Length: 275
Image (tube, rainbow, N blue to C red):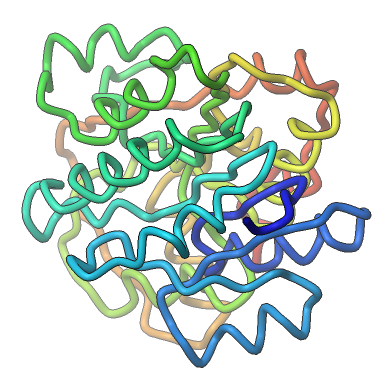
């Protein structure tokens, strides 16, 4: 049996790898998973115990998954990719993981989720507003999966719903550059910088903030028009254009609960300073 680590980070990609690296530097023993065999050496060089785990592989080595889950805390950071098949494959992957988790020593789960669980309510949105998701989008896959991991007597789960992720190698100026007549130009954006994502996840673990649900977005919410025009300009790309005089549909995500509970001050409170 593999020696138990402090923390297992499922999904060492754009967010998970720097998180795992930071946790190692903080003194934790860390298991890290990747679907890519060449990336195993990258994890190893960072002091992370590397595991190749692909939850969608029908030939998944259950022993490798069991060894990876020899930890006290699981950080679950698998991007759902819901558009491909309506989220069915993601739901299947998470079902496989949850079954393995039931037989593991993991007692705390930190689930990296998204503010996409909320419908556009045309107002400020808090953690309680998933009640409207149940009414308006009862088949919301991501919310179903959140609840899969919240509903267990074997562990306690904290969910962090991040806004749009921006930072190293993820430049928002490329997202909409050169596109025209886009909708919702006056809608507020809900963004968060990678540095804040890492700080928040580390603080939740350090402060033992378990059994919670937190929204995590930068304090300021410029319009889509202002944000993406400035982001494109920063990269010398053609600015997108937006439709004028149309009804705006939006949600403005509040992170007040997180800021209060964690005494957290955003490093990047204004998305216009991301670039």
